[in-house]
Length: 317
Image 1 (cartoon, rainbow, N blue to C red):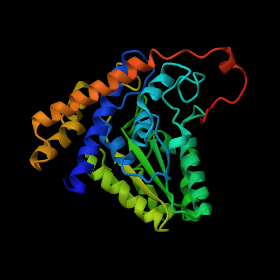
Image 2 (cartoon, one colour):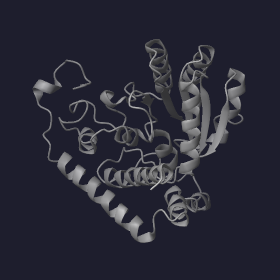
Image 3 (cartoon, rainbow, N blue to C red):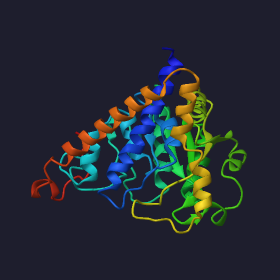
Image 4 (tube, rainbow, N blue to C red):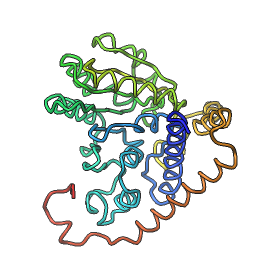
């Protein structure tokens, strides 16, 4: 099998993990932020990075970023369920805590916007370290309307830092449509900073992956930042418990016809890489992996007083 085919299969599998994890977690956590419909934008970002690269993911994709970087799925689920075996030892039950040890910076502030700055700071550290690492900042269209966005992108451009900015534009900031929160396209801001801006079909995982990899290669070679806008759509609610009454059925149905997993399945079949039987087997494999990880995580112990005392919140080891 060629390297291209292996990458395309890996992207498909990662999208399946994202979707199945969403389904399982959404059944126990009404505050979970599902990525239904955005799997291509997410998987395309995090597959194929170097081990020393640093990512500051969007909260809608944090688990996928951590998993793609080598984090243990059981431990990620344990953290979501408040277990002592999670990355914060049960102190912070949320979907926004990635493990430092695999190069993931979580949304520890609890506010949107700061991760863009975290990644820019990591890029400055990488520049000083001189080993060629790159930082990746992924954020939503709502965060692109905050001041953090301007400050981080401007600094990255001025210092030509090895950072890639990816706006995961699902067209809604919770219930606010994009047209009501900003003027113009996000990617059109790039020339004002003197950096390239590229709009990508966020439902095409191959196009997404190739655009991110090209921007990373440019940053690693000293070319500075790139601003990517992944145009996609959130098929589900903002949270698992959100029925999303602010959207029309016709709008959702139109985007559902461009399901990123179905689109990539068709590509794999057309290229002779994976037939329907192979796809079914891979889906079953992923379902089993996710189910076992969740079952094991829910058997893990809850934190005791010795863990919950005033000490450091985040455990790297």
